[in-house]
Image 1 (cartoon, rainbow, N blue to C red):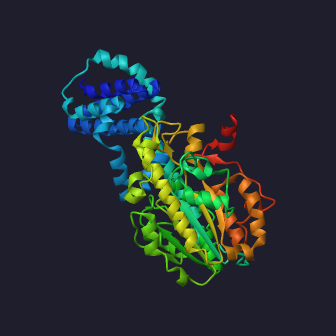
Image 2 (tube, rainbow, N blue to C red):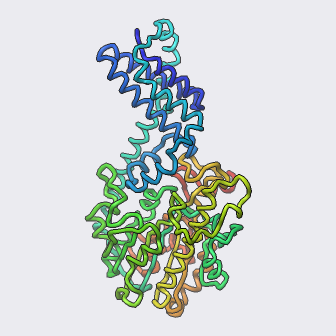
Image 3 (spheres, one colour):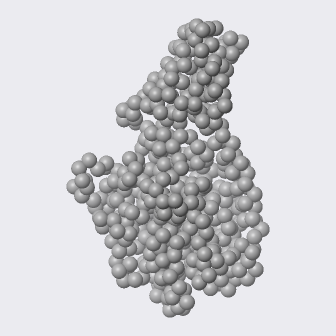
Length: 501
């Protein structure tokens, strides 16, 4: 029996690359048996194609282990389908370079993959194939632990989640408020991007990355939440959870003008419909039900975006209004998200050996601070309350040797960098005077643990909305507030993790 020796080389290499042994044996089975049969019955070319596809899955799996500290999983697959071309290009510029060949695990996989077409004439003795049959049979019981098996199971799980999302999003077309008192005339939600709170001087970072927030915090005009946690570390998943209660559509049907200004996903582009799922940021019908206005273009820098898209401060729409502002923030590549004249920090500010990405990230954070200050100044003369929080955090060579986010089961280090998020609330002078009850409740609210999946309850409480979808126990402003279990990455209880349980 003939068979490309590449199959065995790939399986052997995967053992060396740190893949669990049984998983590697299963790869041997996956690559050996089907390709041998195809080569015998359908010819070598199809066998080469199958081997190459399997090898690509192995290469992708090792790549994710190297850069994201996790093998292929559902989160990574969903990220692939929910990412727009600009992010793909930015990702490639960040990670795909000749430097990755210095990672020997990737290099071995790549060499084996490229060798596939040249190995079709090689043969393996029947005796060796018989010996391999035993571990291959064991491997059959563990197909889900192989890179191809993980890819298939992750895709199936992503498909299931998308079907559930499609059902959830139907409520955007039907859910209405029982009552609405328009408690707050102008509510502003500002969503940051990839903001590691531990790189903010407002939260104790050693460098002055947030001078404006520091000053406002010292003047007690910002209420900093000390313990806010995001359920996910990818924007698409965070938004799915954060907007699962359709508060934009509820407020719009209640009588609010709801504007969505996004410097990432203009007019619905960006969050692509995932295999037919009704993602509200890409589905036209749902978007029209949720928003009164959406911008149609973006800018490289957030301050330029705001200047081009927000109406003049003296021409703001009549109340009641909810403005949702989604920034580009500190998304990778960090150096592309702040103008050159905001290069405040240099490598002299860091210990020797610090990756340059840390400096760029801190400069992007300082620029983001300037952007947030400009938003507060923009609304200063109005009766407005502004809530800021980031979608998720970002690892920047703090406790893990990566820049970006891991996609496996988070440990304490990943939870700290990627799931703990900055959050604060600001009230304009007019709002503070008109709403002493909110102002009185904010210090206690900011001291409570908060789960950003419950953001809708806070916003609907501020609007004075009641309905079957609201709960005082889930609004952090309420004296009866009770924080739910804060599950991160779909499976880890954050508070138990932090407590060491």
